[in-house]
Picture (cartoon, helix red, strand yellow):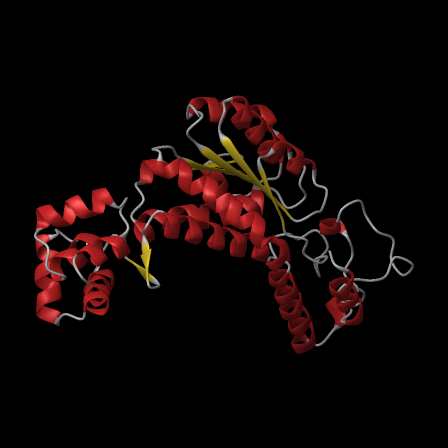
Length: 319
């Protein structure tokens, strides 16, 4: 944490100076300066404090950009080579992982069997969140073994504190199996960081409700995961000029979006875009190349030649 940002937190009352409030071992357990009497504040004032804390949490992600880039490289390399992206987390961090993972197949056309989420306590935790399973490192090791994690995979472990046993054991098992490992935590010097290939530190300020890491810490984790998986998709060729060109158009809204993407990228009419999508059986990348003048066979060849990336394929077609 740079001194300027720390001073800003002091000035805005987001964190108390050490002489004012005893500090816990980790920032995620510290007491926010606005916590005293928080339950007595007018609702508008309390909500303004919560909102400002979320903004500060989001700002903490900026310093992690180099690490997020490195993590995206590893994730993309694993998927490109036929491996999998495996998330391992507990509690609120697990929910952030699940939210990111579940949208990747539909948004970027990544096969569902290439994305896995290991949640402490299993998916039944989505009905009732219990704390105990996060301490079960043996369960994490068993689940990594069950999915046969290997050298081609990339494992992302999330823990706000940086020492939760379940994700810690998950990355240890992953590294032992030769997989790439990424660790995300909200505390500097987290033990997790010593066990991963890429450490993403998101040093969020103390929570307004002390230790409630579903708030600021969770916000920062969600932003970091959004950035990581989006950059991963860019590297895999699934983004072109800000369009999700590998989406799975499985409803009317997305079918309309797919047609709009073909029209925007190639400047063809509604009718031509629709016909191209029909020939491509809904595949947006294929449809773009068909609309640009290639037949289906040539379009497939170009995508294979350029690793699924549209820009060099379109250049061959003079577009």
